[in-house]
Image (cartoon, rainbow, N blue to C red; front, side, top):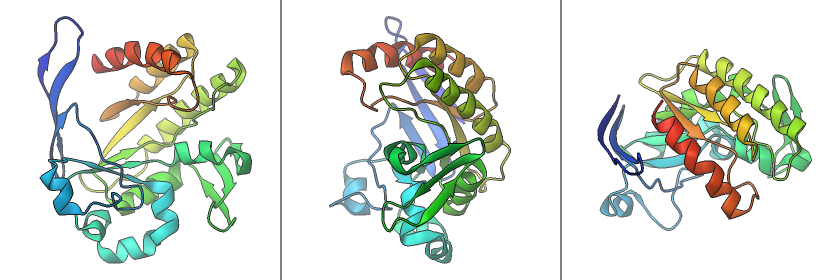
Length: 237
């Protein structure tokens, strides 16, 4: 699935090749954001001319508009978009963070309101993985609890524990044929909680692992201080 091609002796930076159901992704890679199944101002031909290899879509937004009935009728997200290369779908965890004033975190997921019309919604591990299964993305991200910055230690610890519990439940859900599932590390700006989360998430048999809980309001120096070591740690996993 992942072929390591080269490692830099000075920094441990890696160059690799990720095989997905819709083609190969050369890593590291810049991934254009197509939140609602489109990259703004660009079509598929433009993206291919720019040598884009993978696009990101968003579970939360696609579930609301155009909705899963429409995407299923089209034959999945690739057909709906007219895109035949890899797609990664975010789980919606960050959107729940951004809607925190309207959200209530529960043990089995998050109850909140639609940002469109205020309708009551619920997302948990089962719901998120079912949506991504219907989307048939190449890479599905697990549902995680993404705390804001600043957040006290107890709040972040709770998010770390929920993220691990939800990750195990996501891992056990059915997935689309050939779909890869990636776990996500949380821990906020607490180094020991980052370490705890990394140990717990990498102990689960996922196809890949991501750094979460950054760019949520923390100062850039703190973000870089935390991100660098954990990117290296996970790259060796």
